[in-house]
Length: 188
Image (tube, rainbow, N blue to C red; front, side):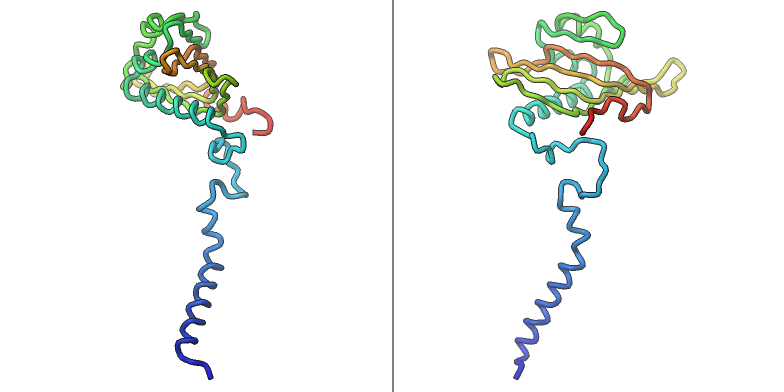
């Protein structure tokens, strides 16, 4: 004889199994990236080579980008070491934080510089590393029309004697707007 509470337990178990089977397609939302996804932006969380050095460099890049977005050129220059170098597309090298600050005189209202690191590599000693990726600059021309510049960048980071991380070299090269994945490395 089947007792009513046993029917209830069986019904609950069957309902739970049915819910699990119906929820399988939604379960992909819990993964970092569904297997069929064709994402063009690298996902650091899914990077099998992720290590503490990369995490640190990505964190530095995020803080650097936040300061530049909030403070403009002043925020950009603040991150450079006293002997830092900035290499701009087709421009003379800017050597030293003072020279970089004089050149990086834009306000965040007139020019918005954003970037996304594609990769980061920490040196074996843990006191130097580099990042590279894609940047975008947004401004207005003299007639008030939007102007967008895009390109690739590389930033070399160094930890100073006091433990502070600073930019020792930042280099950028413009690319045509909408160039997409022109500079993507094979296998990425």
